[in-house]
Amino acid sequence: MIEGVLRRKLLRMQQRIDALETIIEDRSREVFVVNRRLKESLEFLEDIYRTMPQPLFIIDELGAVQSANVAAATLLDYATPDDLTGKPTSAVLARPHHLDPARASPVGGVLRSETTLLTRTGGHVPVLLSASPLQRCDSSPETGWVCVAVDLRERQKLEIELRHAQKLESVGRLAAGVAHEINTPTQFVSDSMHFAREAVDDVFRVLEQHEVLRQWATTTPSAADLVANIANAEAEADLPYLLEQLPKALDRALEGLGRVATIVRSLKEFAHPDEREMTLVDLNRVIASTLDIARHEYKYVAEVDMELGELPLVTCHAGDVNQAVLNILVNAAHAIADAVKGSDETGRITVRSWHEGEQVVISIQDTGGGIPDWARDRVFDPFFTTKEVGRGTGQGLAITRAIVVDKHRGTITFDTRRGVGTTFFIRLPIAGRRSSTRVDAA
Amino acid sequence: MKGVIFNLLEDFITDGWGEQAYEEIFAQCPLQTKEAFVGLNSYPDADLLTIVAKAAAQFDISVSDAVRAFGKYCLPKLVAKYPIFVAGHRHPKTFLMSIDNVIHVEVRKLLKDAEPPRMFFVDPAPDQLILRYVSKRQLCPLVSGLLDGTAEYFRTPIGHTQTQCTQSGASACEFHLTFENEVGAFA
Image (cartoon, rainbow over all chains, first blue to last red; front, side):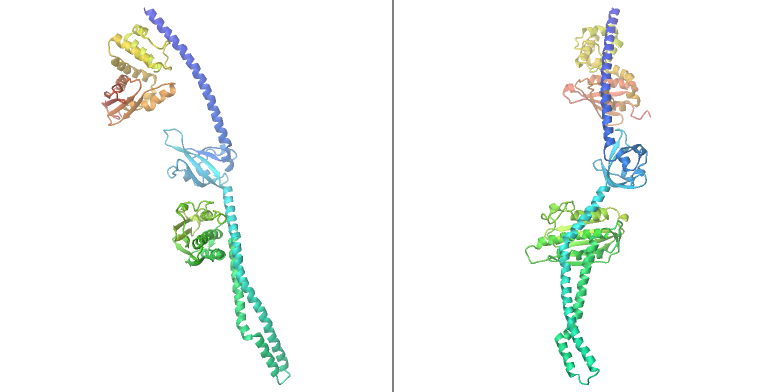
């Protein structure tokens, strides 16, 4: 009996051993296949990591570079990615607090910011950095970052070129108006000079008679005839009129030449490429010169009032601010032209400036039709325009915003009411971008 | 059901009533499975219930009591086999609350096709726990037995009352547990 029980148990044990051997073989095959797939996946990911053109590096939870790809090493001037490994965040990021979990607040899990990377030799590379939090395991509260950088040097260069191109476009667009503005004073300078030229001939003729009289009077007692000749010559030349009008003609000519000189100087200042560094600038003069060269844009549709307050010198790029004011001014003129179209009325553009704490403010108010509701969120978008084809490129306010907000760390906002008009406010830090905190445009 | 449970059942009967008793019960069971039960493989639930029912009849006890006794027997055996799952626990409450989130997760990783039950907990007071057991197998007596075994293993009496059962139409079997010592009382 016991023997039979044991035999059956032994048989079951043998069956279990056989089954377990089969399971082990199956599992071994599975492990092999899975390992091979894992290795292939790993190699695939390593290939992507190694060859991707975007610089990528991983910051561990202690704030050191854990690994980097070739593009990151190249960008930061390291011979190999391994040379970057172990470097503290402060050796790579100019502003490492961007990745401080206590201060950073990623949107949708990803933190994006324009920042500066540091090269091995201490150089600065402007980049758009996207950093995603990296949690090694579910239970770990400590977080690292996967950082992907986009080199902005080429983009910034293109932006500068684009701004300059837009400036040249403005110069081209203004050329006809400027020519007209120069033509008017040139016309009356020319008239005055013609008058002066003829008047001088007449005066010379009178003077000739005086000379004859002077020579004869030295030898002849009676000079009645010669005196009469002089009187005739003076009458023919209308000497009193000439004496009255000639200085006026010359004054008009000088005034006209002054206006031509002002316009040419303004245009020259406007078209001149900006200095690399900001300089101390009299913004009221910038506003006045912009109004000079843009006169032809608005003079048929609007009166311009200038209420320029006393301003301190502002550290900025004068040509850029010129451009920003011009873009808004041209928009104001176009808005008024649309509003008064078909009537004899003209609108009004009021340009004001004042000093407000650490900032100066320039406001440009027009009596145009206002910005439609649907367009208000988009007016600063590149290539957005409400003007008809051929009248606006959609670059004006986008570039104005880039100049004011990105380049000068200022703000640009606007108030608008349908049928009443629009006022743009440009606020610039007096001390330039370095001393100011960034505030986005409303 | 995984073979490891069948093997524990064999040990349970053999330890309690001897090799011969098991062989006799086993020989009388019309099982779907013809080969030996191996721990890693899966077998029909019906085979387990057939063996339990035959054993209960053989020893003249109810199936429910048999399953509960089997549950109590299993707990220390499973602890001996997988000690890591109790290593961090000094109180049965924390151990029980780790079953669904830790132990059953590991079971699914290690045993292909494993279908462990779901266990949900409500923690109304430090010395109390409400356990909701959801399984198509409806083995709530096994849960009772495991609770008995847990209390014995941790040397902490657990009063438990089943307040609802899926066999009576409830969506889950619910147990109200009371621990003689609160969590942390040992610290």
